Length: 172
Image 1 (tube, rainbow, N blue to C red):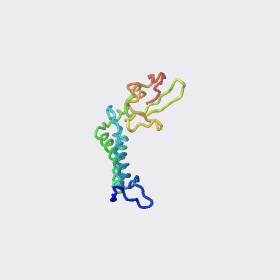
Image 2 (tube, rainbow, N blue to C red):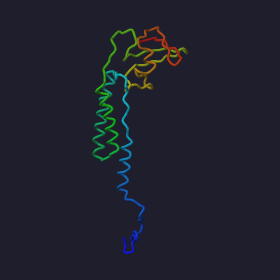
Image 3 (cartoon, one colour):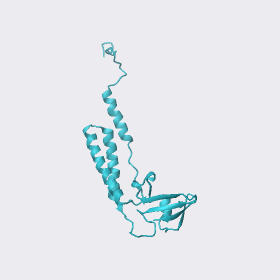
Image 4 (tube, rainbow, N blue to C red):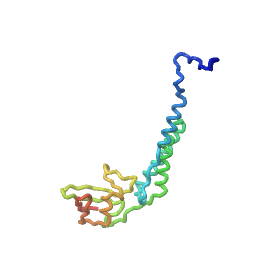
């Protein structure tokens, strides 16, 4: 402060209201990190196929590689996000229950591929898998989905009703 109690004039191009960018980037990162929530973990049994177990392990390896790169680059938000995802996949790996269908089973079980025929005569093929490996676009549904639950224990020729539509099991 000057002798009269006033602040000295700012150098050209500066303002008392401006702040160093060095502090705002760190503040932005801290806010972003605080907003990263945990990934929800299903309360259902974590049944997986052998392929699903391999997918979990591959995802964990990929995330460890990404973590190493993010730490080298000092990308705090990326590190926090990757650590969150690693916690999720580690939990899923620890609780995974490998389940393979019995060979020659004549009823729908976890891990099986089921061919259905709808009321319209169109056929759909679904493989019943774990929650993390389900991908309807690729023909796999989660064992906790309404369709899978309606199909468990059914045999060829049985009919299951899902969302008001009837589906006949025509192949296993």
